[in-house]
Image 1 (cartoon, rainbow, N blue to C red):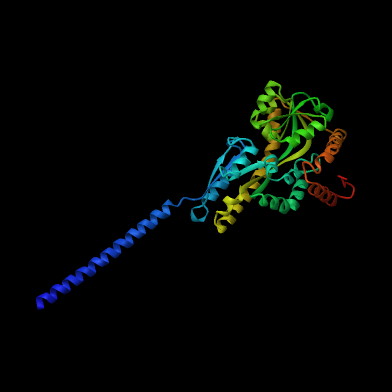
Image 2 (image 1 turned 180 degrees about the vertical axis):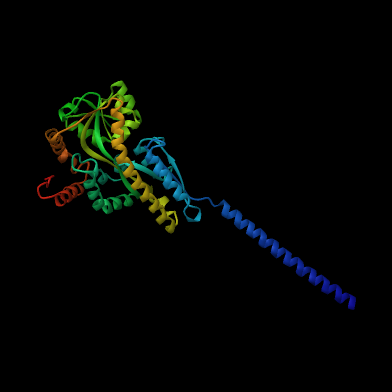
Length: 358
């Protein structure tokens, strides 16, 4: 009897030990599974396209932004950047974003206008701004309106930036609007409004992708390219179009955007950190691009570029030519309300003796 009792106690203790071992083992396996699950959860991926050349200051600023995104809490966000227009023209990029192949892009006004034509206001109003600072002032006041329009179309604005002034690079000297009207001028492929506007104004536009500009110059398909100095240097346009007219035709403005769908999928706390890193990248791009514009001109001059300086009389001729096409721009390329807002802001901000435009 006593022997049976001891046996039962021994069996009870053995069962208890076995249960404890199983519990501990199970906990260990749960921990391993939890660790495995955590390792299996990869950080969100954002695929971004840009026309900027690989290794350019634009690309480097985006890479620095991407590094900060990867370091964000919770594993961060992985940013993959496709440079050199490898994802196609900007209209192609917008299409890819809408179907989810891409989630973000650094775009010029050409691409942004595919989202909403109101964005045209800051670039498709030639000779409107006296300085880049004036353009920035107008942009800051219009930003809430413009960004709301893009958000309504499914795109979140990360930052704005500019690459300085667009200048005319031509294969032959061209100081006056009449000179340019004799030439074949590059316009963005797909930008039918710009094409129609220039044609109606007496110019000869030729639509091409940016990757075809140099070939177009070499074959005589085009004789003139509106471009920033930095892009003209990077694209080697100045070798064929060796004359640069120093008229501040319009600023080359752009913005970096991400689809609202991709943005909303990110943790709210992380988004604030991403925006902070993006804003810093935007400031770097603006500062560096403006500096590079002057450096690029000097570099091209050493390689044969001829800079055509303009005085007040020639500048007035270009301003008059630009103002002649404002009625065609207002209401077609730029919504009337936005167009009028820009003119009003400029009139109210300039000194009394310089209240243009009327």
